[in-house]
Image 1 (tube, rainbow, N blue to C red):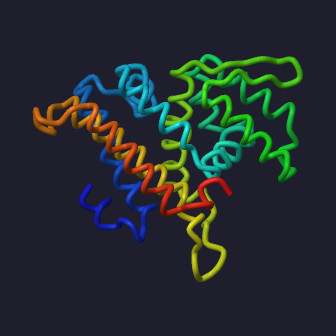
Image 2 (image 1 turned 135 degrees about the horizontal axis):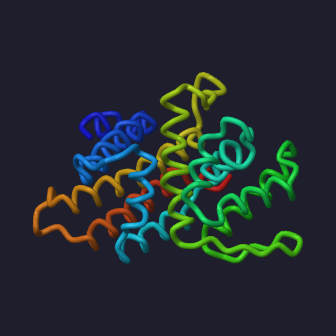
Image 3 (image 1 turned 90 degrees about the vertical axis):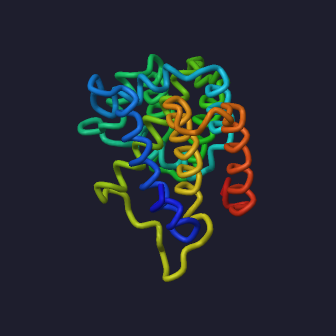
Length: 235
């Protein structure tokens, strides 16, 4: 976490990397000797969220920036059938996620930029808990499905492509734009909240800290991020 804050705000992508490592280590620490691989621990963690933590995840999902949706379309929905670890991970953990992925692949030409944006918009509606209708096929994601897409899909997926160098550089010139940092900024804010919930559960924050304060801090950090990014959040 010292590395995360040291890199912020100039390299918020590195802040996300460091915070994810801290969160992943905390997950395994929560389980102790019974800890399994990270995919299993993430699924258990999302299913163990208390009501107030689940509400915070709803706030996080409602604030998804356009870049996050584009990442999910590219890495999850439009990824190859063979070797798509993200798709397999979500298929094994979520009841309706394979169905949603199939609908998006069947109904949109994901090579077309306009269709990709339409698919991203529909994905956002599904992530917000709305019932989506694609040519008569109706589907509504469960609350746990939506959190799994956020945590095990988006955040863990972003961590993996960054760690393995499988994501192209966002820099298209010598100077990056604010939009370059929208997704890592969002990922850092959400992962920081998740890490703090693990610290809260382990009693590392002191008896004076409440879960409500962690939720309020998430709202404050999201508001600050959107103020910085401005119109780039949804472009």
